[in-house]
Image 1 (cartoon, rainbow, N blue to C red):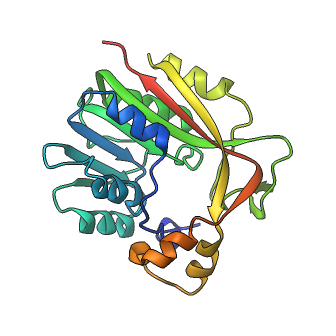
Image 2 (cartoon, rainbow, N blue to C red):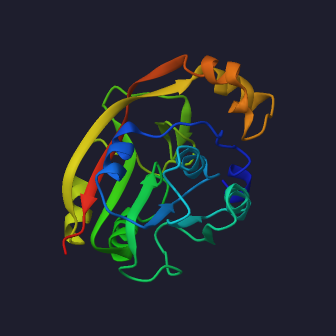
Length: 233
């Protein structure tokens, strides 16, 4: 699927931030933050609302879609945004970022080993990587198909069924696993309706809709696998 066609499927601006990420950010010293595969900027928007990305923080964002990068720039014009694949972050200097985040991206890229190397490269010694991806149990099923397989998203090139492959890539690039969590995927039921009627990214400014969004549907067999990796000094 063409990336700009895929970009028409918006990410709603809600206040969703993984609690694991919030806890991790609160225990680190950092001034530079890089969202790799930022999409429409829903995570950046939520962190800004929570005043975690204050004016003293330098924020970088990269996505393959120009359309989505323009949406991110609208959140905050001070963010340094790049149209770039997640496995080729050449606009970012080696060892320049304190805290790198990539949520639900690595399952989309053609070369996950190369992306792992790039994430490690841009991190400063002592820096932190928060990485999340899809973890699929053998009984997991969803109605999209990609490369002949049932997948959670029509653009997923892989869905990890064990930890071995990703662990090997990270450790090969000198990263150390600090902690991890897996949470059953749940999607707000109302999102399906709102996307069908074509509402904008900021629909959840309405208090009632924010409350309705708390009604979520679990997807059996699919987990949000969240990891914190450290680059040794």
